Image (cartoon, rainbow, N blue to C red; front, side, top):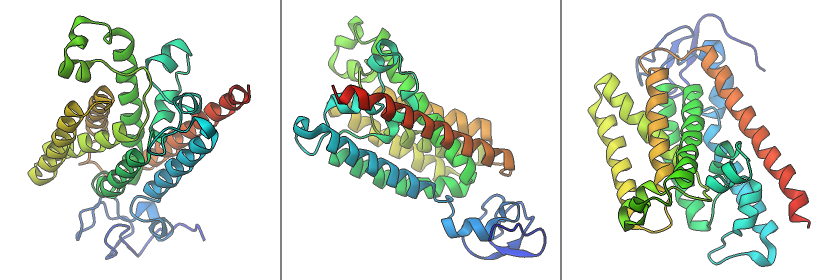
Length: 289
């Protein structure tokens, strides 16, 4: 079932045309390393993103439902879990990171959501952007970008919430929304902005103005929306965009995806899973008080 093919032709994991098992680029869709070191027949069953988008969607929805159930009578309007439950399950921000010393929440907060519309829009963006970034960078590098961007975004907002939220500039309405950070923050939008940042870098590195301009336009549009609407964590968005752009630069989309990228992607998933388990395990005793 998991046998590696070392010679001959395989179907490209993205577009399905025949390619050489060792080809560096698919001649049809330009996907890097379309044969995936001979494991393409196995991985193709999972899709070009190797099932990561499905994993994120399923994981975030499951944690959202769990947060609703644990909220009980503390459930807020619009099917919003209580802040206490989100905090204990792995929400990030200046309070969890600096006061509670739950530093691992920069990895877990992106899997939690504060309301039904919040999770609906984020899941839609992940489904839209994830496969596209996987086509351009490879599935392994897409996972790395998503993870790094989320962690960078919540690190940004935690630092800003700790050190900038009480500054005179934070008292200015629009500017305060940009630099103030958050005491408590959740959502996949930091990683979503990271995927957009990776698209912007891809356009700059490859000369593909269509891809780069699309990523930048979406980021600016969503950033403007965040400045206008209250309750949006703009620092997390900014940090996610920066993290995605820098990760794309380090991973270099013009170079073929390597096996160590896949290993690092798996490591990102394992570390995130451990952080989520740690959050839940440490939260349950507190919820039972």
